[in-house]
Image 1 (cartoon, rainbow over the protein chains, first blue to last red):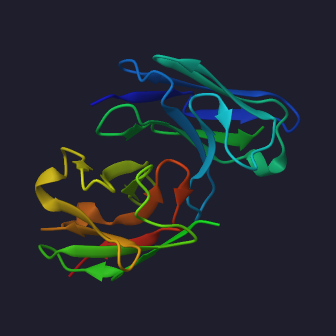
Image 2 (image 1 turned 90 degrees about the horizontal axis):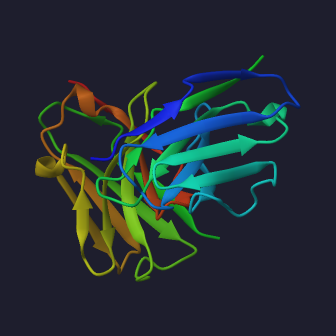
Length: 107
Length: 114
């Protein structure tokens, strides 16, 4: 099973600033990596797939990069609605696995 | 616009079988391009993939659950289903159905308790 490790567990950032979230895979997942945003009581929302492609309707301030085992989600200028939990997800191998999440909180 | 909706009992007794159905609207479940899967999230915890099924009939299950899980498709109803047997309190979670990585249902909470 591929283990996905996200860092940091919690990130405190001020509105308008940049946030950088990291995800590391225990073995290569090529570019088969997605990022999700989840708010309390809601289903995860797809932000990025293919490591760097924004999903439909996702604002340009969200960007993804990386391949192989190292991935990054960057939010260029945080808006109030961006404070949530973010998960990375590899869909290269079965079982598909998720990271443990990064909680993005207001500083 | 594709929509997925989970349905099933919200309360299941220990040792019984959890059964959920995902109804797909706005698209055909017979598409050969996508996987149809189930993911769960225990209260306050992270996400776990349970398994997926493809139009070809191929299924993939999480090894940690494989002995207890069955996923099937009913193309006539545009639905797919999850059965998880011999449940315990550890199976209490919000269960989501999904198409590929993009489209998810809203989730349904299933509590295992006597």
